[in-house]
Length: 70
Image (cartoon, rainbow, N blue to C red; front, top):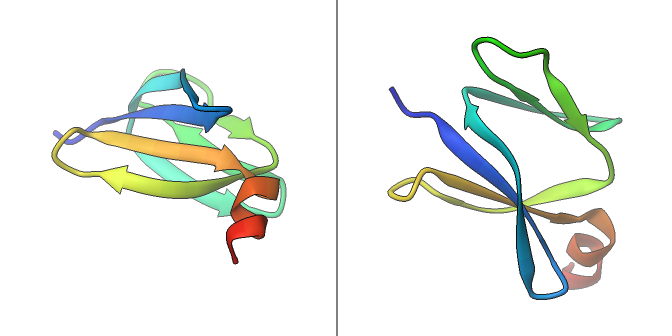
């Protein structure tokens, strides 16, 4: 199975948000992360920066940083 680790990248640092993530949904409230055995978690005001499929890592950044790059 391909489960991902999710990290929040901010100010040059990465903070692990969640392990064993099996699903992701982008909503108006933020990014909703799901696992097999835990309740879904909503991470507000973030955007997906990149996905490393080989490393099984999803990197989120604050939405304000994502908007600045557009």
